[in-house]
Length: 608
Image: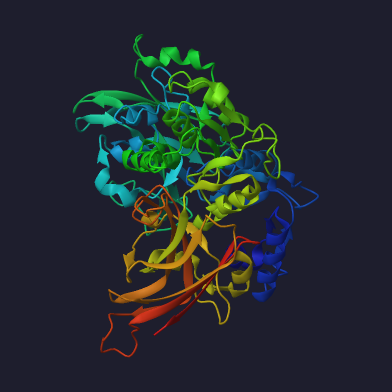
């Protein structure tokens, strides 16, 4: 629509959209703005368009936005290649005109904990070896760039270099599928290089007067020009260097090698691996590798988390138990087998499946147990029977709960544990230990201006009416009553400006000693800070023992879990009870209903 408005009656505009629901929505928007006749909309991928069939001739101008946080992940390169080969004239006008990627070498203990489980576990003394000595690559994160709001951990990042240019992509000419570059980077401080933080800068016009940058706020170089407010659609990217990092000294130079394919960028430092390095022994694990998320790596390396889980299982005090691990916790499996030399452990591993079994086979010796005491269910069944447990009742049913590859879900969706426990009820002994024993749904009213702005309804955008898209695109803020937005999974610590306005309160309790059932709860909570309330943040605290003394919280202060966010349709001014302003509320009543059949949580609220 912007292109059509700029060109007026002097040209033709063709838009392509491969996803049919979005194409239908676009037609509605065009009609609403009286531009249906000005734009030809084609429901195809751009690389399916043909000159003479879909468009009358090669185009003079290309307008596109096929960028992700890494720049290349949405297929920028192959899309531009096809456009230049088949759809565009020589030397076309393009918006954007150019994109440049930049990077910076950094030291960060936090980032190190997200990928080096071997190095972290060396500092833990609980007897569990997730990464046996000499097998440091048996568990690791996928080698890729991870989008992250790095501004949120600015105080925990130590720059070890100035920003440097990596790759340049000109939209006005055909890009190459693969590229390599070597950057000689001077070190500006002593430290260990744990990662490279990268971002990109768009030059939108040919003249070089309009820029857009995704750089972190601490970058103040000339390259960091443009709009830098918080946004969720583009973040910085982090590439982890394997192991403990590369030790460097101020003034030293290191060679960074960067390689790009059609859809990704990778990095390597010129570090030589000594012949005595433990990585030479990786063949002992038969080339098996278990890929986990950075957050899962950090959880497994967290000494406080490990000691809490260890204490909960040890305090159970069971002798000769049949223990079932219902989720994908390799840690709990090793722990249960390690604590009792006479126990039998059956791990369901619903997500890991054979990967979990292979992993156990590779670490059995380091953890001093035999595989005849541990088994992994091979075939997916709706439920275990006494036949599967060799006629024995289950003494311990445990989980973290953690389900492989489900880290992006809402926190209460891990109540799948409760469903699994219910299915196994017929084979549980009368005094079976269930761990965790309970789940407590916690919440806090919060000010979340950046997140709310990113999810509020669209109205006028650059002079074009967009309100018609709100329902389809799932807008949350500025919704007309009685409509409400959905729950959103977010890591609150990465959500820009945040402020707790109320005390943390309990809404629901889930009792895992009983079969799953509907749960209803109500809480009235006072505001302890004045401000603008944009919504409620919810999470689950897992009570691991019957004494309620061991609690694993997944709340906002813990970075390795996502919380659920319920944004308000309209922001509400709140304050401390007794405030003088009539526009401020002193408390709120929150009501919640959990329905197990759908695993959905319904939340209602009223400000007082």
